[in-house]
Image (cartoon, rainbow, N blue to C red; front, side, top):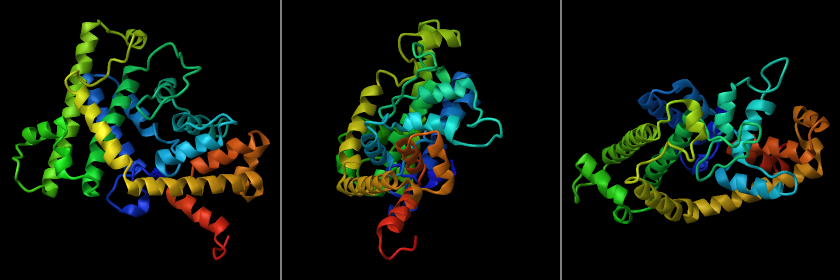
Length: 330
């Protein structure tokens, strides 16, 4: 969990100290998740646990790292950060003398394996795949999406990746203006930015709670079993907010996630991870002794992937230097 501090959310750690990391994102997701659960009167602790665990399997360098690891492992089972999060809490963490993993409840593990957003899909084999996720897990999904929509917008503004004029095209931006009483022509200060992002988070939480409560009443979903057997997830944005969120996500993808600065870093990240993977596969004895012990009961490709996936951005860069720079001490 502590390593998430030096894992990319959008910006690599050396881009600046104020941008979000996987750790700060995870904490924000958990805060939103608890608010959603409290608003609907469901299990806050379970929702928070799923939120806190949902990104444990992320590789270094964000989704670029996941993409290259999946390509490198295409003939050996692939790589998916959601499935990797599950592996972390059930197989890779060693905290007990008698068994592997963290001894999490079935409901927490089910919520992790059924985590679904635009970036998360997993195989729920072994966890009643015919059933939908619990309401708590669905709320964790929505907390994740609400957090990265609002906070990536915040970081993009801070990094000046798009202009206020470009944002004026978005319906959600125009409505946020009205909600906080910000008139056109007024200066865009840091306080205004904080106001806008706070309003977007609060608006999202209220909308999700009201929409989900209405769906529960409409379909008489008065038990957890009924919710999981329903034909679709019930935790969602309202019909009025959904198109505005969709427009915001498309904007962030074009203006931020495909920004030349990020694309350049993603290209470098793929090279770092590819080089490390090839080096360890060629000579597994370069792995740390404790990691080498895993080779007795797991394939070399999976052991190497687990090791790389557990790295922080900083450690991966340092390790690349140790292996490939002639001037670095090994």
